[in-house]
Length: 156
Image 1 (cartoon, rainbow, N blue to C red):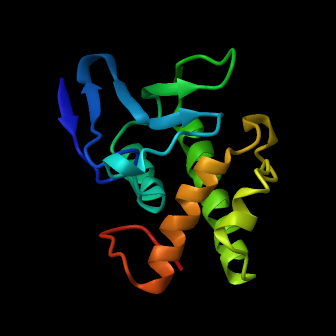
Image 2 (image 1 turned 120 degrees about the vertical axis):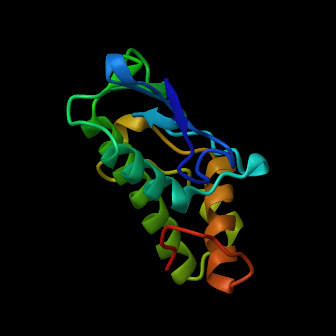
Image 3 (image 1 turned 180 degrees about the vertical axis):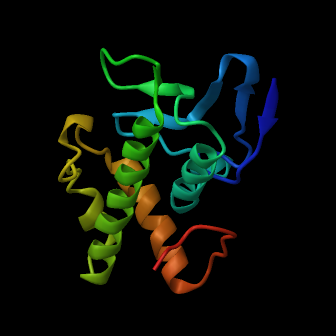
């Protein structure tokens, strides 16, 4: 068994636990399978680097590795494949792009969080909460203004 830290994502200290002989990687809350995630900003979450963390973790394992997820959508298994990780990565990318577009269009945080949309291509995940959208909006606004530094991932 080994643990590896890939960087800030769900919190500032999440790690992937690998059961090497079983070819299993426990992602914990780094991986939310097909549902809107709770974002733990108070404990160091960075959505933008979550994309990089997922990609790094997926690259470290064989194509046939089984992943254990921290949370899943209703009636979905708690285990899955690299393809499931890529769906979550793509969802986070879509969420950031949606937020960037709102900021670029001049929306206020209040206007943005009042929408609570489902994202195109990810309707099965359900609608976002105003809290989640507010956290992502704050992260993107801080990054755009230069008031916040990050070590990996891409903002704008």
